[in-house]
Amino acid sequence: MYLVKTPFLLKKLYPKLIWHIDNDSRYIYLTFDDGPIPIVTPFVLNILKQYDAKATFFCIGDNVGKHPDIFAQIVNEGHAIGNHTFNHLKGWKTEDKTYLDNFLKADDLLHTNLFRPPYGRIKRAQIKLLQQAKPELKIIMWSILSGDFDIGLRPEDCLDNVLENTGNGDIVVFHDSLKAFDRLKYVLSWAMERWSKEGYVFKSLE
Image (cartoon, rainbow, N blue to C red; front, side, top):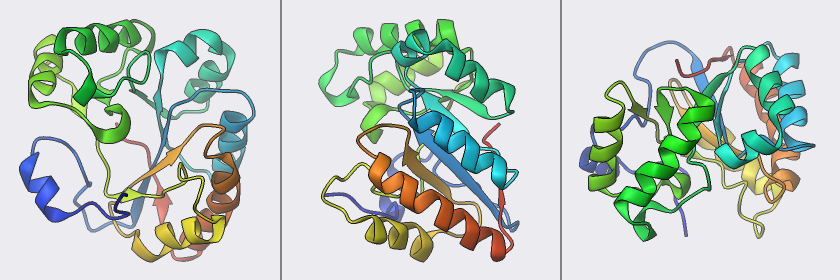
């Protein structure tokens, strides 16, 4: 069970995490979790290029090590990079020191001030440890969850999730993964075409 639009109460509970970019401009912040990998990441990069769009890729360190050429393509095409741990750890089920070490192992490859916890699950103690290790760190969450990871969700319903809920300053989560690809490859082109016609600009999180 998940909510497409992040509830206000959750934002209040974790006010120091970034859930939304508050401004009056018609900006949408597309984010892609879990890559880089073959097939999916190049597809995403091609679609972004068609719309002169910039996005943020929250990369798994292990995938960066396996696919350095694809990672280099993300960087060379001007997209922002975020840390998504080295092994996609679930914070609630991971000892705090192990979580920190895994984050730092990924940071050795990624060198970024952006971080998104896998599954969106992180303990307050882990937040404190990460920010002590890297004081300039920004922990990015989201305001719109596309649901592309849900194998039981029809692509058409996934498209409705984003089109019916996304507006100015929203941070939208997609997944750069084979599990999500059936929905992602349907949704991304249609959504970006619609948003572009509505005057939205796609920006990365810097």
